[in-house]
Amino acid sequence: MKILFDTNVVLDVMLDRDPFAEPASRLMSLVESGKISGLLGATTVTTIHYLAAKVMGPVKAQSHIKDLMILFEIAAVNRSVIEDALVAKFSDFEDAVLYQAARHAGAEAIVTRDLKGFKWSVLPIYSPGEMLKALQFPYSL
Image: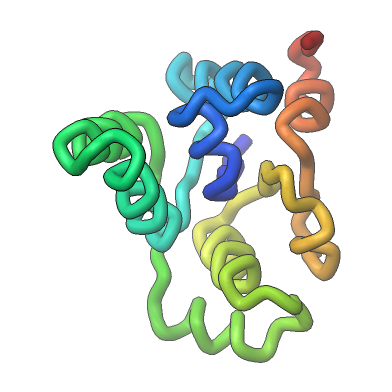
């Protein structure tokens, strides 16, 4: 299954944000083991680098980006994605861009903690815990 990971889910793992890091980390482990295919929006990569550099410095942030590039495919953000995002019913443009990038890249679902931000999605939207349950991998905090 090809799943786009929203920026907040990746940051939960990188910044070890409790209690969100554990289920997000388990999902990333499934990407690492090849049990699911993970996607990141191209804008997610730049946002993560920007925020991580502020917290841990540019060298560590770049190292984390390199690790993500090994694990994840990148969902392009190109003219078609932006044009589709502009006419989407989403109230948040960034969410619209990620959604359209996921759709254009052939994602089958999106995992996010911002479920309301993706309410207009045709793709299934899951929290990390819900995604683990949908994939039939046991989850407990």
